[in-house]
Each structure stands twice: as C-alpha cells, then as structure tokens.
Amino acid sequence: MRQLKHPGIVELYEFSESSEHYFLVLELAPGGELFHRIVKLTYFSEELTRHVIVQVAQAIRYLHEEKGVIHRDIKPENILFDPIPIIPSPAGSKPEEDDKEDEGVFQPGIGGGGIGRVKIADFGLSKVVWNEQTMTPCGTVGYTAPEIVKDERYSKSVDMWAMGCVLYTLLCGFPPFYDESIQALTEKVARGQYTFLSPWWDEISASGKPFNYDLTLLSVLILFGMGLTHRVCQLGSL
Image (cartoon, rainbow, N blue to C red):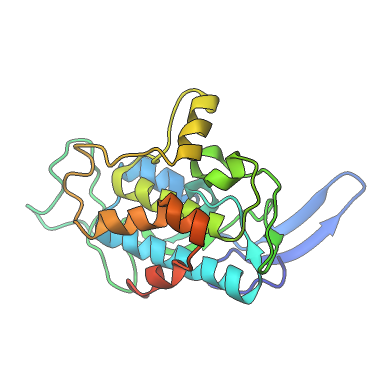
C-alpha cells in the first residue's frame, strides 16, 4: 500500500509492528465514511453522484492499470471524503420530500452535499493480480460480484461490479441487492436479480439507468469484463 500514490486513495504514511499488533499511520479524511453521508442525505442528486463516482472510477483505474491491484471490497463504508462547506440551496429549489435533507448548491470542480475529494480506503482484502485471476472468497455480499459468491475464478472486473452497486446506492439511497437472509441475498447476487424500484427511480434521468445497468450487467462484467472505468471517467472530471 505504500506504493499507492493517488489523490483518490488514502495514503499510508507509516507502518510498524509489535509481537501482537500492526500499527498503520494513514492519511486523515475528516469527512468520514460516504455511508454516513448517504444516511444523512437519504440519496444523492445526479450531479453529486457523478462527482463521487468519477473519482472512484479514476482511483480504480489507477489501481488496475498502473498497479495491478484488485481492491475486492468497494462499498460506501470504504469510501472516505474531505468535507467542504454546504452552500444552502436558494429558496424554492430545495427538495420537496420531507425526509430529504438539502445537499446545497453543487459546485462544479469542488463538490456538493458537504463532499469534496473522495478516497478509497481499507485495502485489507486487496491483492496484486495484474491480468491473472484469483478465487479467494471475500468482500461484502451486497456489493460482491456473482463470480465471488459462486466460488468461481474472478478478475479485476469485480471492482467495477461493486462500483455499479455503489452508484445505484448513491442515486436511490439503498443497495441493489438486499435481503434479511444472507442465503437469499447471496442467491440474488448470483443471479444478478435487482430492479429499478418505483418511486425511488422515477425521477432519475434516462441516462442514469442504462449507465448503472451497464456497470452491473452480468453479461458485461462476467463474460467480457470490459474496462468500464474508462467510460465512467469520460462522464466528468474534477
């Protein structure tokens, strides 16, 4: 992790160990986990979602193409951010929903909703694979690709699947795969069984749905493993 140098990745400054513990000195991301910001805002606007997901895609592209690293646990809890001040929305432009907190004015190149630069963290499950495949079952089930839950060999494309699940979560406030039963959840993931539920997806633009669909479609990520991080990065930049 010491060799990872990218603005979208939490930097490791120092490492030491004792007979019982490992000690890591990591870059501070004062905003904390993206997960808590989702809980606070309920869901993100499309502008804010693009702001976040483009940065995640840029960091993943760096990991995959320049370092040969697969993260294997991309999820909102492992995406941290630097906070920025929230500029209140003008009167009359605030969200109509009673439970939706105002994320404020989006500032191109800076951010919105209190979120500035975002950074991928927690490389405890990461592995250097380059163009090879691996088979170790790991990750968080709701964001884990079907290959992993089915105990099949997989490649770096599982990170893109997870990114698609994060994108879905940002836009509507809940993950694409969910069930109280772990077994049932695992079966849904294995089948790629998810929907764009109404009314949460009714107001999301036509461009948002196919984009998310591409990132989680079984035939793309399992059969072809296309480099969709390139497409995400083309959607916008900081």
